[in-house]
Image 1 (cartoon, rainbow, N blue to C red):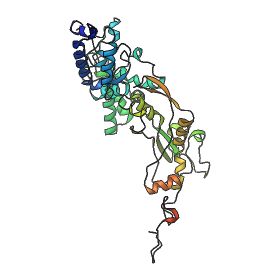
Image 2 (image 1 turned 30 degrees about the vertical axis):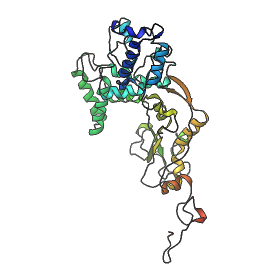
Image 3 (image 1 turned 180 degrees about the vertical axis):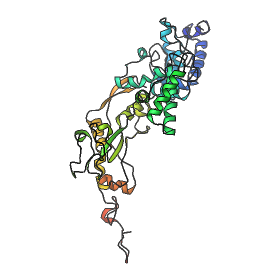
Image 4 (image 1 turned 60 degrees about the vertical axis):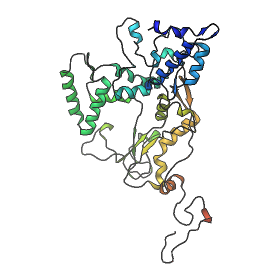
Length: 388
């Protein structure tokens, strides 16, 4: 390989650029952009002697850098641009190899590689990810672990994802699911990496970092049992009990069933995920281009919360205040450094009924339009009470 690419280090000839070097740079760039898993949108890693494969640049800038500075030393194998490469632990004598460019474990491999980026060699990064980001990147270890020695169809991660999907689709009870896993582990070859129970599988998937909070609510919508009120047993406003009464009293809260519960999807980890993924990190730096990932919550029904919507928005408001006043440490995979992320709330998009709940403006009657206000052309029908 190195004999075929001697042109990489013969940049000048007779005081001028070597035509073979110029042609070789063009071939290199064409190869790099043909490997979608190893690029960041329209940008590729710059292998010049200054950038040393640490930065992603536009292809024209990469060509310019190579012409001006030449290639990083001893880069005959384009391992950071998609050529099959041997992992460092093989070089250190462990004997384990892994081909990243030409082999894949299907959508599960793509999912995790998109989250972690095509190269997680921390020694080449300008700054190591913070502990929260590292939890996400640990999912790569599951991609590399075969289900058993010699298994080519499934990794530990793909098996877990498939089994969890089966449990969800067919509503398998946890005890039945654990018994099935126990039998499968016994039937598989020894030293297999299949997890033994549902609890361990949930813990593994949780490292993806997209949590959901379950928050108990007053049945009448007066309050939520959250923050300083999380330990209360009854509503502090109307006195309604938090949990349904059961025949068998239990001292553990695990068996208590609340009258009402809402599901909150926190905003902060979802914003951090957009910076951790190479597919979206670049767009997050440009306010006129990026698509914002909103925090979400599912307000329990069946009644419309109306003016009590503020009760259910408390977790979101707390997160927004923290993002504005303090911020959170976040890792930008495209820039290879940590930064203190801050965010502000700009606007909402909603229909008129939702607008009324969020803003407190009455969207009925003569002043229904918040723009026209008293200059509205609203009128009442002669024989009716409704305003048109």
